[in-house]
Image (tube, rainbow, N blue to C red; front, side, top):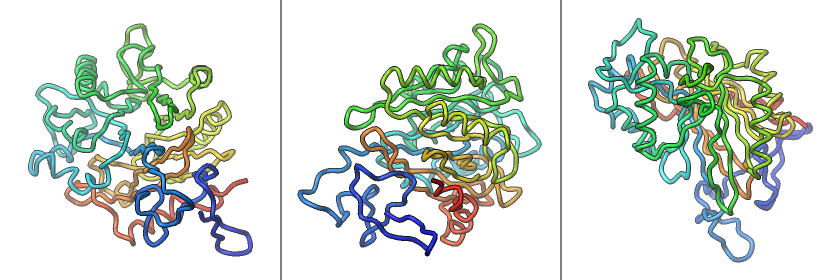
Length: 359
């Protein structure tokens, strides 16, 4: 493991897996990662155990909305083209998350620009299948753009493809319900999702109304407490905050993320960001303020082209490591893996020692 010191650039520490925390970065040994390539990791004491039997691999991603210019590019190149550069990094995970902001609509077409009402062709949800997505967050602002029937039909598609959803639903109660998934070693993780502001009337508020789960501090407190009372080991809360073009969180965003940690969340994630935002640790718990766009068409400035997704690894009911993979959106609207130079620039924006290594 690596940790900075006040006296110098850092210090290497040898530690066992039971004491690893996500606040410390695991170093590769002879080019091998204990989490990504455990069978080839050379630093082993005693008999080699199969770490994959104990590590849960969860991929968390940024904004997905296959629509507008992204959809037009898929019309031209085919859906396999859209995810071709990403697919190798999505193999073998136990869980793959996307925050999908768009519903399937009959007769959907893809104008290239000047449109802020979004839909997706059912054909193009193949991208979720190709990336092995099995957890979809529905806190986004555009899932009701084409009406409630499109929302309900999309929920049916998720169910038919064994994809669990959270942060939205066909009633306010369903939207507020967490999803609980099994981890290795008999542990469990619960995920809750909220939309902070509901700017497009996308939230399920009235009886039997479909949509996203409107944020309310009291509701979040109850939801986290209920997961804890049910014996859930890891609680992760996702919030669609106000969108703005800045790597720093808004004051409200920063306050809510800290409140959620105080209420008992282990991980907090801001799923709204169309550009990457800072990562911080608060009371030893990670806050990922925003990852940027995974599958969305924005290229009008550098910030919205830059993004990353995370390989989370959980061990014995704890998040022990989060490994970023940086991406860059091409002119053609095809996400690409970042070059070392692009990745270094993004890392400097999102990873700041003052936020990462707090007491």
